[in-house]
Length: 225
Image (cartoon, rainbow, N blue to C red; front, side, top):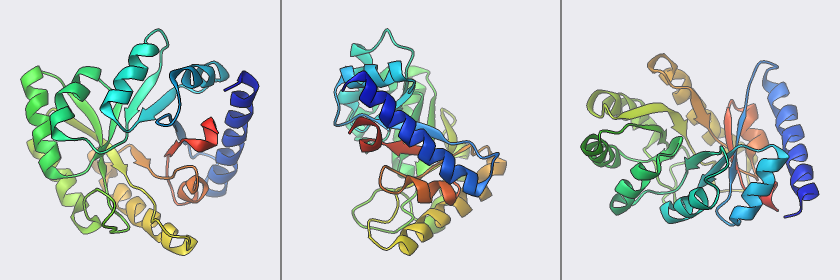
């Protein structure tokens, strides 16, 4: 990726984010996570020089590779993919800023057990399958608040920072919006428990997600294309 292309992509994305957030509120702040899973470390470095600071990977081995390649840069790394239980220790050792895909109470308990063994803590988001799609991971919306509370009570080494969801995988914008609104309602109920981030929206639907209240978006092609 050429530097000018990185600057143009980031400027365009920021302009779109500004437009969407101002339609919600001039006080609404949105954090951009650049998803680099289909890109090379040098592209991340170029975007860093253009001004982007937070990046996400969906595979532990790819996260490790890019963190190693770019260890001299003060980057903020997020893990956004499904976490296999045999990769938990590897992820703990990488110490990501935020693990966004805590998708079950069983995973939370296993993660907490291994965090305790290493005397470590990890910031996480509870993933909600707000569209109730078989192809997606995450807890069901009707169970989310109880599971969130259960993790707080039984997994002291996990620091829950909010929720994450993926918009409905359909063309109908009303259905996508409904899935985002479902997550936002849950997020609002969890704010008294310390929920800070409502991570919704990717390259194809982040504007709608922001209008529905998302304050963290995960975009790949919008930055790296």
